[in-house]
Structures are given as C-alpha cells and as structure tokens.
Amino acid sequence: MKEKELISIIKSTLDSKYIGDDCAYLKDLGIVVTQDSLIEDIHFSLEYTNPYNLGYKSVMVNISDICASGAEPKYLTISLSLPSDTENKFVQEFYEGGKTACQQCGNIEIAGGDITGSKDKIYISICAIGKTGNRNISSRSYATLGQKIIISGNSGSSSAGLKLLQRGIRDFDNEFVNAHLKPRAQIDFSKNISLNTNYKYAMMDTSDGLMEALSAIAKESNVHIDIDFSKIPHSKNIEIFDNWHDLILFGGEDYQLVASVDKNCPYGIEIGKVSEGKTGVTLNIDSKSVFYSDEDINKKIYNHFK
Image 1 (cartoon, one colour):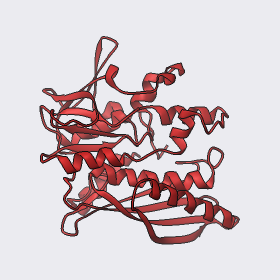
Image 2 (cartoon, helix red, strand yellow; image 1 turned 45 degrees about the vertical axis):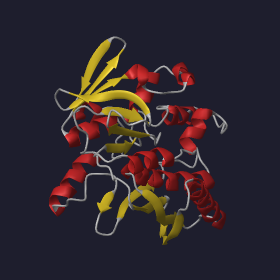
Image 3 (cartoon, one colour; image 1 turned 180 degrees about the vertical axis):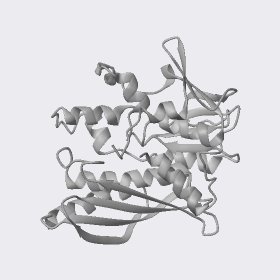
C-alpha cells in the first residue's frame, strides 16, 4: 500500500479536478485549501521533540503547502485527538508553538478546530487556507520545456537532524537538529514568484524529499528534468554523514520550495532545467548521468504505510 496509489484511487473515484496538488485551488472562492495529518510514532516521536516544537512544526508544514501553491497563508484549523492521560500543559505548549509559527509567517490565525480523545496515541490534523488575491497560483502540472529548475535553500538538513536525534543527540542548537524540529516555510520565495510571474509555473515543497518533488513535477507535467547535483545547495557539514548524497536527494522534511520557472526568473538557486527526453529525472553526479523514473524514486522515499 502506497500513498500515491491511494490518492490515484480517490481522484478517479471522485472524478475530481481539484485533487493532484498539495492544495486544492478553489478559484470561485479565491482560496486554496490543504489538510495534513500527523500521527505519533509515524510522523513524530515525543522522544525527540516537545509539545511546543510539535505545535510549531505541525503548523509550519501546513503553511508550507500554502506557500507551494503561491497563495498567501491566512487561516488554520487544528484537530487534536489525545490520550486521556495528556496533561493540560501539553495543549497549552502545543498551541503556543503553533501561534509562534503563525507569527513568524505573517498575519496568519488559528481560527478553531476540534479536540477529542484517543486510545493511546496523539493524532493531529490541520486544515490551512490561503488567499489567492492577485497571485499566480502554481500546479505541479505546469512545467514546460525550456524552463529552469530552482530551489529556495539547503537540502538534506532535516533528515540529517533526524539521524542525530535517533542517535541520542539532543543538541537543539545543532543546525541539523534545529532544521528538523523547527523548519521554516518559504514565505518570501513563494510571494516573490507568485506576484511577479505572468506565466504558468510548477512549484512544490520538499516535504517528501527533493527528488520526490522533482519526480512529481516531471510526471504530472509529462516532462524530463535534468538536475546537476553539484548545484544543489546544502550545508558543507552534512558531508560528514556516510550517505550524505542520499540525505540531500531523498531525505524529507526540509520544506524548501522547488520550482520550474521561466529562464529569466531572478529568484532562487538554479539546479537544473526542463529538457527533451522521457518523463522522469536525470541526475548528473560525479561525472555520471543516472535516470530516475517515478517508480525508481518511490522505492527510495519514506512510505507512511510501512
């Protein structure tokens, strides 16, 4: 069982034009809407984080989805399912973290939600709403031949931080640990592109890894993408890890934005281009060119159902 397979089933069953991107663009209402769920011991562990950081990250990753659409994040609702032994302090600190995330990203408000009991795990579900206004809204299906591929910042830091936490390192000032526990949605990058482009463009966040985002854009746009590994921004300190290449390419939860934009776009760091070829991603690394189909990349990324 895989997430993409289930989404395909849902989309075909509903015959929906809205399902496919991380946000549904409801043009008649002038908004985009997204929903994300996090489950204890699948998406997070209280062994590695605290209620404040959990609230912060839960909110920030939903803001990131709105940013990936190009819309302006405005409102969130939060649903929590909590075990009966959860202390009131947990709820207070969780919402304090969520409030901080909203404040860091501008005029965003938590407008309500729901709270219920659960048997033994914490379940978090967040709905985020963005305002489209006069912004140009993206879709992963909008990449076209001749565009360049850009990214907003470093790749691989969050997955490196998770590895350190799993090794028992609790240095919250460490750049990698901090990147994992307290990611930042790319508000300015999203705003600059969506307000200053008159052409169609594809954009996604790297929540499931850089290569997964590139593959999704390639598949939905039916294009071939060429990537130069040497141009992918990353912290030099990540190179101490044995598998640092894989952390940069396939490690998730960096929440950078990757986009296929016009070659004259002045924003972001250029890492590749949309070129002639079969649908998929070619990675140019260490004087070699390696082609990845969507199926190849799905084998490398995290599967929530395992």
